[in-house]
Image 1: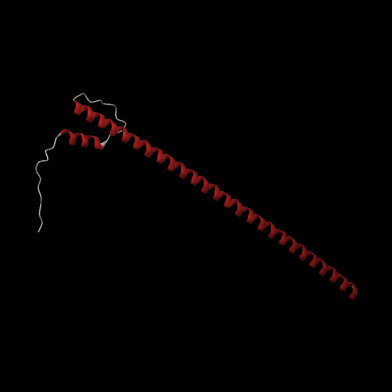
Image 2 (image 1 turned 90 degrees about the horizontal axis):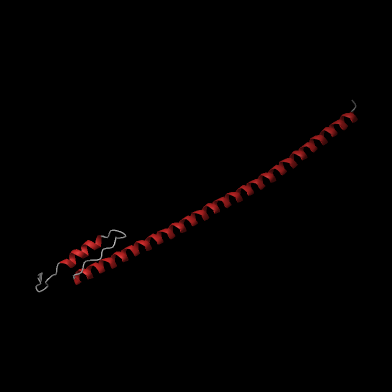
Length: 133
C-alpha cells in the first residue's frame, strides 16, 4: 500500500468513526428525551393518583361528618321525646290518673332521677347557715 492509499484508508476509517460517534450521540440524545418524557408522564400520573386519593378521603370525611350529625340529631330527638314522656307521666301522676307509658325509644338515666325527686315533697321551713371565722 502506498502512502496515499494508507492516508485515504485512514480518512475513511476516521469518517466511519465520526459517523458512528454522531449516530451514538444522536441515539443517546433521543433516549434522554424519551426518558425525560417518561419521567414527566409518571410524575403527572402520580400527582393525579394522589389527587384522586385525597378527593376520596375528603368525600369519606364529609360523609362521616354527615352521618355523625344525623346520629346526633336522632339522639337529641330521642332525648326530647323521653323528656316529653316524663313530663306527661309526672302530670298524670300529679292529677292522680294512671300514667301514660309509651315504649321508650332509648333508656334515659335522668328519668329515674327526676321521678325520685318529684315523688317526695320537701318541706323547706328550716335552713342551716355555717359561719366561718
